[in-house]
Length: 70
Image 1 (tube, rainbow, N blue to C red):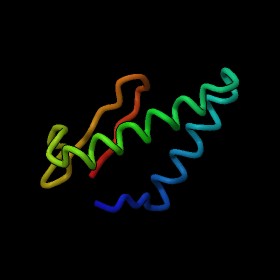
Image 2: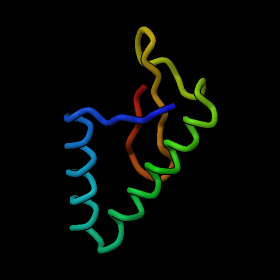
Image 3: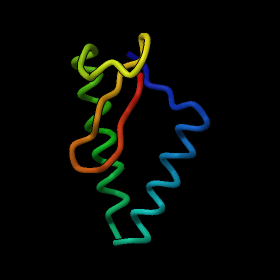
Image 4: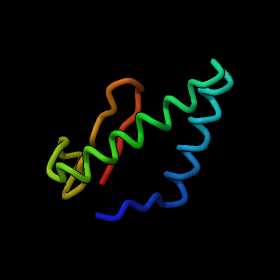
């Protein structure tokens, strides 16, 4: 499974990363690591997550108030 962030998702990720870094130095990096962990989980278990709508699924992150959609 190949992961592609569209432009809005990429912008949201970058904004969120910068926000967390401004709050506490290194927190943005922890956010980035959590996103990578979530993506690995989705790749390993493609059916994980709840149905958002139609065929779109949502995987809720554990350590940050953020979710990944696919």
